Length: 224
Image 1 (spheres, rainbow, N blue to C red):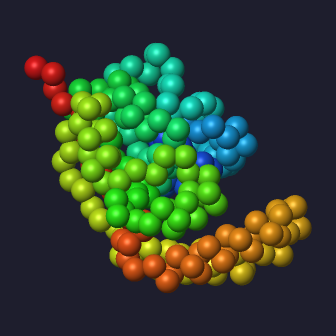
Image 2 (image 1 turned 135 degrees about the vertical axis):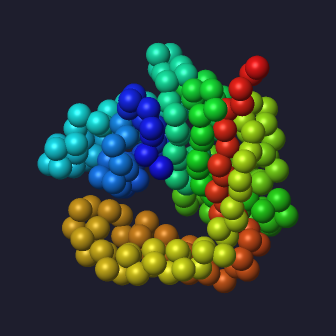
């Protein structure tokens, strides 16, 4: 829902990439959005999009690690959004601690991520992490513990694992559709083939056997 206060509603997108969610939020709400990402090129793309659509006055960007955010962000954000990127953090606990620090009291963090089934065979897990540059694939219980230790109170959780097959199939169709374009842009053909084969292999896995796809809605508790 739209905020009822006169102050701008601040949403921070951790690991925003080229800003797909930010584009939607800027277009359909009056909120101010801050995109945080390690890739300056990705942030340039969302900035250019905002300029074209005359939304630059409500967009801010910061290039850097979500494990070490600027000190002046402390208690300045109403909502943190993050989509399937925290698994790339070298230390996810640091991300949650930083997120807790920059949220206002009763602020909300909403995120989804790729998790590891605690009983998954190591070889299959490494087949995913090695190709997807994932440093710290964690289990469901690890996420709950890390959120609790950071001060968050979990409000709602969603298991999206059943959507993996259709997601993987869509990714395969995108590879087929844009293969020539990627090759023309200099993408290594062996990398494309490896990723394609990996997706085909993942479609053979039982849902939740190796990977889990979960979403969490958490909030910063009032210390009083």
